[in-house]
Image (cartoon, rainbow, N blue to C red; front, side):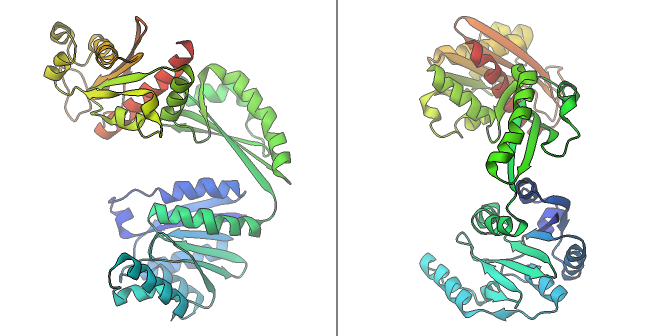
Length: 409
């Protein structure tokens, strides 16, 4: 069964916000065994939206849209669906009461313009939205299902998880879908593919490979008439892949580098401290995104200037001789973080985030170091020369290297 996804709003086409709804929904539809035919971004134009919905209803059995359900004149998703189906929108008294109550609880008066969010066509059923003022629409037409959801990811995800996904799963049948994502680092995409080559090209279980900022991911999708049967199909393939790639696997499914590192630190009763330059505090922020990280993370020093590096324990002579962006200084920063913050392990980042070169070194030059128990290790990297990417990728690589190292400490 084929599906497609529309992300609606001029702000998407102008680059003001990034569409995170579509990738999320693609992964969710795979769990239902639905094949995504295409994803599209469409501006707030009634003619364009109407044409898009019209064509989608001719070729796909499931159409999901996000955005365009607000109360303003440029929120046109409802109007486009009504036009395509030739139906008239009418105000629903129950939805109006719920909407007015929502504003009353917030202690503010409701603009009359919000009443458009309480409108439905005869073919539509309202989908509750406890996080916002815009109910979703569930529409069935000529064997297809069209679901309109709000654009804010928090609202969309809650609506999807609690209402849309269960309803779609019931509609598409009782087939069970079980997935497993295996996350690796230290190999190229081609290298991983070569090591598991015999497992590609099969339908059930299916194996896909994807390059991500935190390494190469392998995703297994198995289908069966029950969860147990699907897991029986998935398990032998997972075991074979794990055997082939074991030294390079750092995590599974929703696990992130910071979660993986945190789990291993807690298991070993070890503590961590950081000193950052080019990442400007992003490493410490990412580590502390994990609930309970205070059990193992002592803290961080953002030593963005050379003066603060030396004040925090880095020998000024190293900076003078090798430059702040060097393996020697990265190692000194990791040692200083460990000593100053009384941690078992120190980790550091220094590099050139850009947009200009530094110390004669090109943008994207990065050094990460880890120090522990009178031992230390240095990791040089050359990253694409884009500031935001350099900072984010440096944090990911630093945590992945720590995750690889921790089993040996």
